[in-house]
Length: 202
Length: 303
Image 1 (tube, rainbow over the protein chains, first blue to last red):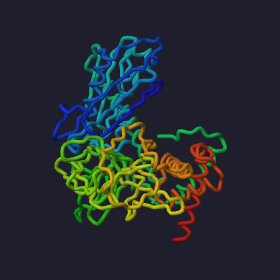
Image 2 (image 1 turned 30 degrees about the horizontal axis):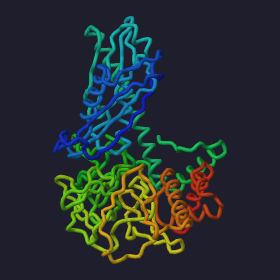
Image 3 (image 1 turned 180 degrees about the vertical axis):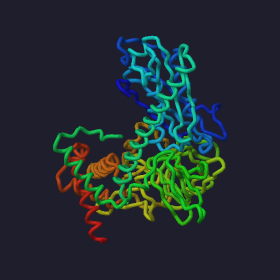
Image 4 (image 1 turned 60 degrees about the vertical axis):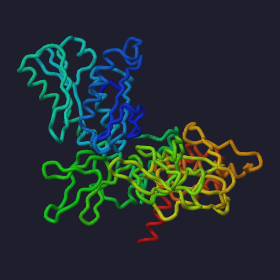
């Protein structure tokens, strides 16, 4: 999305590595978010378990868990790894979109695609998909994740205060953004599946 | 989305694209049978229908949960997913690797979401890593294998390759003996392919040693061959040639049968391509063009 670049990898459903974590009636979803050292303008070395990383891992895990049909794959685990290669604002939403795409391409059954988009409010105008400069201006930053077909919200995060009216317009804009992303992802997936089927032949 | 891992030059790119375009023209598949996650599938509500794999109901409509191709068999509507995990079915011939030995059973890794169980009581041979799916217990997803017949057993002197399981079609024959080369080819339904020196189905009283081969990177050559049973150099080269043919096919995403694999092998021989050059860009394009040729001739034959 814009200058933000993310790669996602999905492993599984596979055998649960840690026996104690096995859930007998559903799949275990794990997620690891990493930000590459070279992803931001100035090179920063981040320790593995810092707060921001763990928080985003948790957020992605929870949003993904909401859409994966975990009951269909008991006693298995699904690992999602997302790595930010280039950060320019909205890494959270980019990661979620990448993870959805990876899950769908891996053939993991899902209720719906989760799509995500961030939006902000600056100088009295709502802005969609803030980049780093816009984000660091200090305005509110709202990350929204929705299930487009089911029309449900699975993720809503905001930092700093936002008036009710402004929130309405920001939310509306973000929803539209999510829908646009969903359309794009769906088209891509369909094209991808078509290619695979075609090459396979009969 | 997943591009080839080889660098093509401009003309090769164009040739590959035209080849793929031709494939597209040849296939009679209609676009609308392809769905992505959360697309609705149109069904005839009056007749009644059965929901199969990869579907669920939402507000009276059938919705896809995976990306794939919609298939209809009588009333059953299901989605055949592409590139999923291996979905076990009873009677499948598979190739696997023993990863754990526990009392009375072996755990076999078969590219499934769970390790399969091979009870020692359901084996004739003391060591086997190639077996047939006996039963799937749906309630807990455990898979039981059996290797009762002579033709199953430990595989030696060869290479194991891993491809996407959707590329291997279920058929009557999974064991192939390539007579002209003296090589065994086993296409496991789980996407594991074994290429090895031909062995006759033999009596098995010799050595009940449990040999565990550690996993290196998916494909490996078994070097722990006793000295007296030495594999000839030509045979090893043949094995590598077939292995590379399979690798090319798998990265192009073409279906795999014995005939297609042999065609690619023969192509490489007639073109005088060295084994290591088979993974180069030029050969990829050649294979794609060959596949177009083959499919179009098939179509001609039919119509």
